[in-house]
Structure formats: C-alpha cells, structure tokens
Length: 374
Image (cartoon, rainbow, N blue to C red; front, side, top):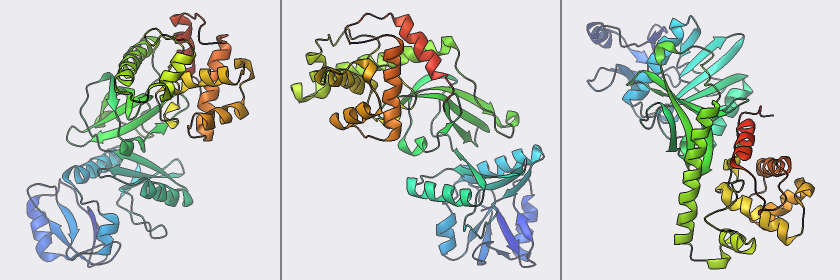
C-alpha cells in the first residue's frame, strides 16, 4: 500500500519522487499505521519495488485488502494517481470507505459524481467482483476496473484469446464493447475495442495503444469500425469458421448424433459450401457460448422439423428452440436468436437453400454491428 497514517494521525502518501535519504530518515523517526486496522506498518525500501507500506504482523486487514502488491500494481496505482492529479481532478489514493469496508485504489470526484478506480493485477473471482461492484453501487459510486495488460499485441485488428477472467472487465457503449487495460512498464493504456465473439475464449478485436500522457477523464472511448476495418473482421471470422468446421469433422465421434453434422445431413447442405448467411457473427452472441454456425444451423433444422416459417419466429418459438437444442434459455440468448431471425426476415431468407449474395449479408452485418444497442 502507498498510504498510511503517522503517529500524529496525519495521512501520508508515498511516491517514488521522494528522495531515498528522506524515506530512510522517516523510517527511523516516524511510526506508520494502517488506515483500516490501525496496526503498525513498516516502510519498505527494497530494490525490486517502489517504496511501499506493509503490515509488520500478519493481519486480516492485509488478507482482505492486499493483493500481494506486485511491482506493477504499486507502480500502476502511482502512475494513475499522478495522471488524475495532472488533469486537476479531485483524487484520493487508497481511501478507506468504512461504510462499505472497501478500499479502491483511487477515488475520483468529478462532475458531482464519485468514481472508484480499481487497477486489477491479480485474479478476482466473479463473486468478489460482483460483490465489490454492488458495494460501490450502494454508495452511488461508479466503479471503473482497469485490468493490467496480460499480453503484448501491436496496434491493429487481431484474433485473440480473452480469458474468462479478462472478460469480466468488458465495458459496453451504445455501439460496441471494449476492455481498457493499462501497462505500467510501458506507461500506456491498451484498448481492445469492437470486441466480436468467435467461440470459446476466441474473439476478434481492434487493439490500440494510448500513452498515459494522452489519456483524459472521462476516459477516452474507442471509435466505431470503418467499413474497411469490418471487412478485415469478417476475413478473420470466416477463416475461423472454415477451420472450426474442418476440426469438427475430424474430431467428432458422434456421427449423426452430432447436432451440427445431423443438421447438415437433414438439410441436404454441403459442409464445404454452406450458405454465407449461416454462421454469421452477431453482437452479444457470446451468451450462447457456441460458434454461431452450430446454433444457426440448428435453428434451420428446428424450423424444418416443426414446419415453422421464418416469418412466424417469435419469443415463444425461440424459447422452444433453445430448450430443444439444449442451449441456455436466458433473455440475452433469446435476443441474439431474435436478432438472427430479423436478419433472415430482412433479407427474405425462407430456407437454407436460398442464394443470397455475400455483399448483401456483409452490408447487413456491418449496419447491425454498429447499430445503437438498446
């Protein structure tokens, strides 16, 4: 931690600009105490980490609030603190919120609102993540989570793996989803923007680096994709679809019990030349947790089995379809299937044997990918 109270009950904030000689003298002449548990702290001046405080004795407080305080966590907190100070913001470093029993890395007061900044460098469970957010919400504090950059990628569009841990930090705007990360060693923010689900933990995203000196508050928001950029997305996506189909055929041991293979057989489709509108990417489809080609083929097969025309698809039919195909029936999943049904209706697609041009589908997908999300 970087904040402590002296024996005169004065708040003391460490920073790496304080001369080492001054800190050594303070360590000899001043006692420091934890703002939460009030136990005595030691001022550590090692070679590996920037100066910081640590509990002398094992403390429940340390296990509750401390994350093992890695070098990048300490440096990142300090860098973010000075960023906000340079922007003339009212910012506190490591304030203890006694009513919540929580201690964000930073607390900002701006535009009559409070923002808790959490620079997350260690794994956090979904339960704890949700609990902290609920605590902030109860106090009308807006939480902003900034995970540390877990990998190095150059600027541009990439097919990447985003772990379940990192997916917790996805933020949404009206137009797209993104993750804002920070790398203290490079002193730059890394944005994964316009995130598009493929399957599993695989996504396509635009990567952009922003040096800390160019950051602002409220934070910079990444822009929408251009038509040319989205074309690259589809190139990556269709290549992933091709590889996925090839691997499914090679590894499947279920034969016609494999729903995807059964759908292709029953619908009399050619695995190597499926209609372009089957297996298309849709916003929010990660809630279904399957590659789009699996559930979109299954939908056509379901409609064939129950003799349901595309125009008749509604929430009730989609709920039946999700149960029939053993896909989670959440409201989010129903919306994604409805979005796909709207695509079929708008393009006048009645069955999987119709010929629709690639450009027609691409133009529709681009307009929907950038559409304002309700």
